[in-house]
Length: 120
Image 1 (spheres, rainbow, N blue to C red):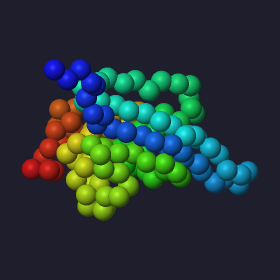
Image 2 (cartoon, one colour; image 1 turned 60 degrees about the vertical axis):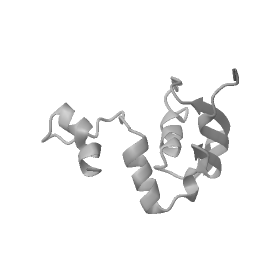
Image 3 (cartoon, rainbow, N blue to C red; image 1 turned 90 degrees about the vertical axis):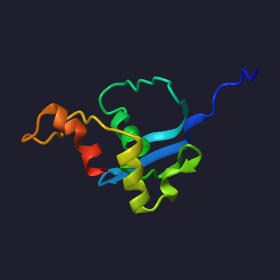
């Protein structure tokens, strides 16, 4: 019987994100390392401005890191083509944005079903 933990589904290595501003460079994330296995529940908590949303955008391929890697099932997200990244987001992950970017003409259920309908 194999008692080793399952292979991580998401692996983050040396992930950093910086933004250039008029006042200089703002380092939002520095050298984040993380592994998440299938079925594992993870919470990202912290004060406002700590980088939680930036981390989620990077994990979902909505933004690119300044440095580092995000791997999903062994493949670097940022090696995907634009079409592959779109398909990945449509089939493999879901987002609930903090500012409720729902379409007002649809019910909550219809909004949640929208990615499946788009993906047929």
